[in-house]
Amino acid sequence: MNECRYMVIVHPLSRRLSAGRAMTLIAVTWVVAVFVAVPNLIYADVYTWHFDDGSERTVCFIDWPHKQIDLASVSFILCT
Image (tube, rainbow, N blue to C red; front, side, top):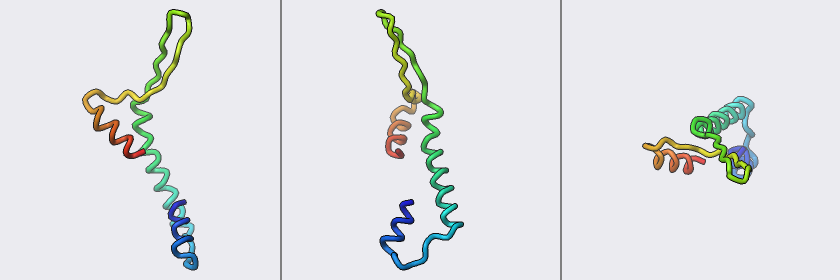
């Protein structure tokens, strides 16, 4: 989508994207999105805490590996 807007603004009279090129850009966008989402799929976990008053709280968060916590969390934050 951004490349289409770039082409329209910078080169308004030039030819638009071909169908093949548009499909390639869409596929690359999906592959990158899946690649960025994989750490959430791997390391996300759901925890439930039960309190003395009978209430409970369920929380979903990313539980990074302990040895790689700094590298993994910084890399994920920078990529997203």
